[in-house]
Image (cartoon, rainbow, N blue to C red; front, side):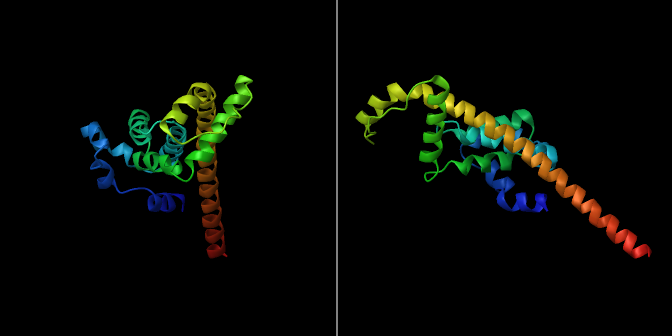
Length: 175
């Protein structure tokens, strides 16, 4: 069940291999271990994807692919999970990360209104970059570890349930 669900939500192997930004990896994308889906590769892919989702730079997919290749975890799942941050979720996620950073740095959050202009961005970035980056690091680490252990546990739980059902069928067929 987890394998079938995960295969449904991940992009196609050829689509990833032919993606214009991921072509820089060339032959590394042909490693079959990057395309296998098992408990280890899925949990690792969740860790990579969730970590990279909080990277506040526009090259998250590239970083996720590089990390998936380095750690030899499922590449499509790693890249797909980066899309947790999308135009709808980016503002609340990064604002939350900023607030986490202010708590850990002991700074009060900036109370000046943010203007979505180049001048407004340049003015406010000087005072928010440290809490934002620290908060992103903390949030990415926590979500990465949580994703890894939750997927590992859910996969194991599913296997145990499957084995219990198989044993129950076997004992009911014997009687």
